[in-house]
Length: 118
Image 1 (cartoon, one colour):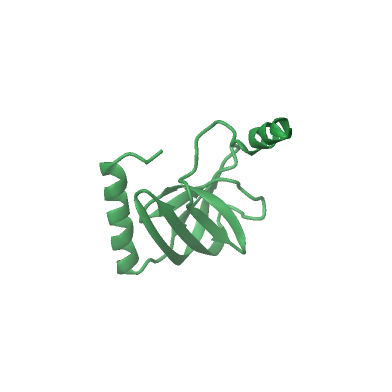
Image 2: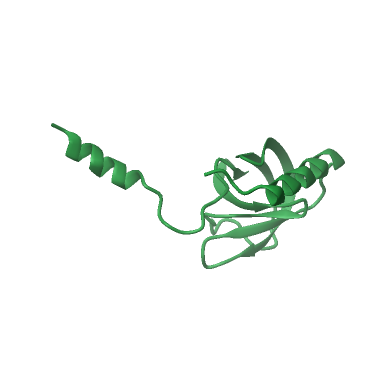
């Protein structure tokens, strides 16, 4: 009886086409969550740019990675280095502990060795 309603709700839940963020991974800044697009030992790229973040601004962030290449979380200080018209922004880490750099190196190696699970 309500099959048509299920289909309408399902259609609304579908994600728009375009470059997908790394699934389940995010950057947290001031209790706001931004989908993680790319991550390295030098910095990150995230989506959903918020004008409250300014290029040149320093920020305390939490990085949550939960995808087929790795699962880990860490906090860091960064400088917002880029923001584009597509809603993405990037940051460079100021200082990372050697343990985190090792984790990020292993993550990058895993990511280059195998494609993302679909």
